Length: 381
Ligand SMILES: *Cc1c(COP(=O)(O)O)cnc(C)c1O
Image (cartoon, rainbow, N blue to C red; front, side, top):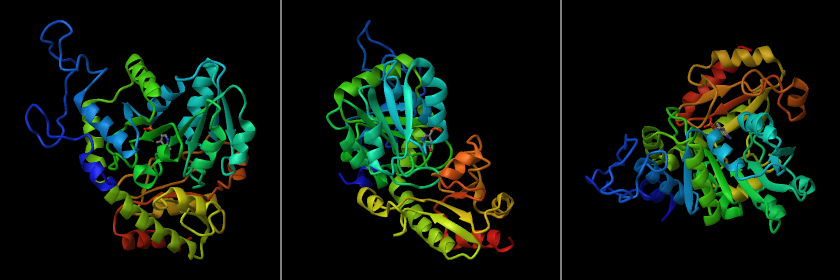
């Protein structure tokens, strides 16, 4: 099955009980048994729920894995993955990591003896240098937030090969429409389905997809033993969102390309970060491992002024000032005062995260209206 068919059909059959074409929301906590232990495969809804099962089978197909596991959020999914490790184990992670993932590693898992190393993965040699006998997991995020750096997934997986080290890719920014890390050598894929998979900014949900049965069994155990599962209505919303994933991401990428070009030629704009530009330092890697360049764009102002950035953010009409990304509507954010405010300014500047850096999640509106909106917000600086 090709991708556009999978999003609509993989794992999805008319409901066996009624023939309902859309997967029903099985709003139940438990299931009747005919005799003790004699049941239809469903005993208790933390362990299994038919709406969740359909979503998990669909996600496994989209990422070319064998099984998927859904959780109450992307961070709950991450927590389950880290619990595959033992105290004393070490993890190597991207240094330009989603803030919540960073916080979970240093404020939660560190207390239980899991050691984190943050390295610049733009050069896979930095990963090789950080590997030691205790290394059990490599955590890649690509494209990164908000600098839109690209990590060569295949090259990093090669560094881990034969060393009994798992590689997990947080595929939230790309979505499986643009990139399938399991095909490039990764062992696990993480999604915040809150973003592109859900796609309508109306649900919080996470998922892990794997390609190995032994890891699948451990995660199935953890999913049930810890119990951070999503409710059936949230599973339904993500299933519904996924049906148009390819259409939404295709259009959002097209819009982002035009928005990035517009910004790049604007006299008030400084540097534009967009992996689709030939000048982007990892453009070739993006071209190799992604179907398109994504719909996230960040840029700063030629005069690097915090106040001017705030003016732009306050003046857009269509771009809504908000955290998150990946919905049909375009969002605008200011990392220095919002998502990355907790990182000291000196550290922010080291990675190019200037005071005026603005991040866009480009949606699927008419691109002419989006460009007009940015133009009117920039013109009066
Ligand atoms: C949002 C996000 C997460 C966390 O997901 P939640 O669903 O908010 O828990 C993890 N990684 C990335 C890249 C994200 O954007």
